[in-house]
Image 1 (cartoon, one colour):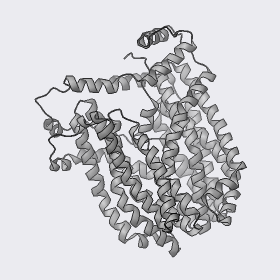
Image 2: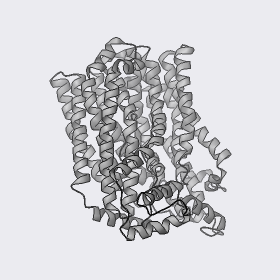
Image 3: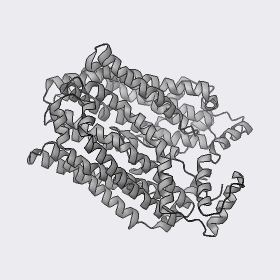
Length: 564
């Protein structure tokens, strides 16, 4: 492949992102903390079959087929060549790399604001569907329980919040180590080591969760009493945790299994599974909560069932539709191998746990603040967050498309095109935010009624809609500017901007306005909005005024050389 060819796809960008509280994180843990070197351990290397070459003919064929230039990237290059009258329909696709390289060296490849807008819109459309499916898993419980009563809604929210902080965040952080370990093992041709790393991480994560599960089952009521004064909410939240804990092993296998497939270039498997499990999750929520009359406890039961169906779906996909992935499964497997060489995995996993926990904790602190305002306010906060999280899937999809396209332009040394793409993304983000805000405002009563029948909760949410209107526009600009930074390779700057703006600016203002000035939910959202405005402004300034595009291109070339 030429040095200037497009190399990144939207699926590869999407696969590395972490999801939290219904809103995907804009940065991965390694953007914050430099992980230690993760070369393959000598013990593992010796356990491979030494009688075969590193990449024999069969393995070499599979490896090259995974890394072969995708049709998505060829299509992007073809469109840009055609836009500059450098490609016609009579040419063969095999001619694209040579034509592309010649055009770059001659300085003939230009783009336009309108072309970038169309490209970003086209790329974002399928991603929106995927993220909505992902987001629907948590929304289904809010929908079903919210119509029982505000106490049930608030209790489920508290239980979900506790599960996120003490369970899901830790698991997602731990499994990020596979993004490095599995990918490097596969890239080195150590295919069976990919499966061994999957098993190790699964066992390691389950081992770490065991003490947490004991606390969820036997000590959750005692611990929650220090956070929330309402005994009814504590009981509902504790029951939620006791049920959900039985689904956590399934969730662990899904997160590890997803990475097992993704390192082999298979990014659609989890989407296919979600296409089945997301509607089934909604159906289970309706059936258990309402049809069979289990009440609020039906929601965590539905989630638990779904968490086990998701890894089974990945297993079914692997065994039935893509058996080539089994070449990464250890053939002479010994159970004691899963407990060896954990130190390297732990060194990589700990930074992931720290930063994912920080991401979750920031959102959950706001929920804890709302819980101290009363049941009505906590229920209102839960619904309000669900609304903005749902709307966020659109600009976040544009953010992924932006990061991909900007990264490709930088890899091709087309900095002027990258700048135009960033401008088009920010413009698109503004209009998406305005459209989202307008829809939420016009249909504010109808939208909130989907989540709850409680009129007091509905009125509370409608009361903060003016600030949510502004929030939505700023949030879209935040997402798109973050996509620009990721495309430029400046994730670390964006990461620290987020930490500063949220923890130093946003949360303190939320606390002061909420409890010192008695602004209640208005105070919470005013602080969040202030932090978000800070993030958007600082990120935009970094993208357009305080970055050296030539240095960014040079850095990208060095990274590509390191990979080779």
